[in-house]
Length: 343
Image (tube, rainbow, N blue to C red; front, side, top):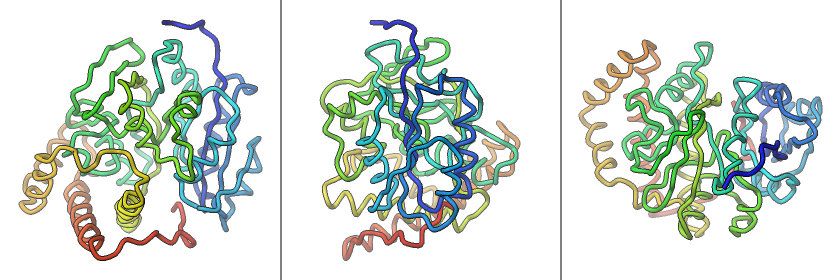
């Protein structure tokens, strides 16, 4: 059923923790949106930044809340509890909205009352970004393991698809409606995802943490979820050209998952994902040559030497995930974020 063509009120939630280096770009892109300003509230949820994050935030008309648990997931939970508007936009401090009609385009699918949320179908490829950011934009994901599992959620230059899962899809021109149900659940939730607030409130997802990719997974356990992939993009300033940053983020990703999963707080079904894809990931890292072939294939599609980070990205991910998984059998600790920086 279609609703009237009216603008929706939007609460933009941005968790921050020593995010000053990129927050200016993020906020500037938000406040340049061609969207009624009175219908937007921007919430900064800060984990105790010691850099200029708060100074940058105060340059804009934002609401600032504290996040004593420091993590982005805890920040999103605080933001949701304080949001006043109809739609919740989960935008990270290292995201940049690439054009002024981004919000206007993202809310179009909500005219259909069945649509739970919307998300850009690609990452913005920008020549000026670091080679790792360009690689992730071209691959369509920040974690190369997802390429092998097929559960990614952004347009991949190699496959020409935004996901490799089997989903019912219908093309509406500017956006695609999809029907999500287990076991085919893409990693939807971060970097520009917009969801109806009432759906989140009814789902009992509000606790101390809000794990973004667990939202759709949790909702889909009850009934099929109708979601929209909008044919636009969002920039993600992930690691620039810093391999050390990439290593730190991969370590944090797997450590956080193992810790919070052990506490029973995670919902996304990682253990049930494509087992053959995981085996392929392991074997190809051992053989190495197939990863180089993938790089060459990507380079033929889009001539950017960033593709040749692919074998190293896969190998580092394989080593980091394997080592930390093995160590988790002995001890799993909560990570100390006191010295964490966005960059």
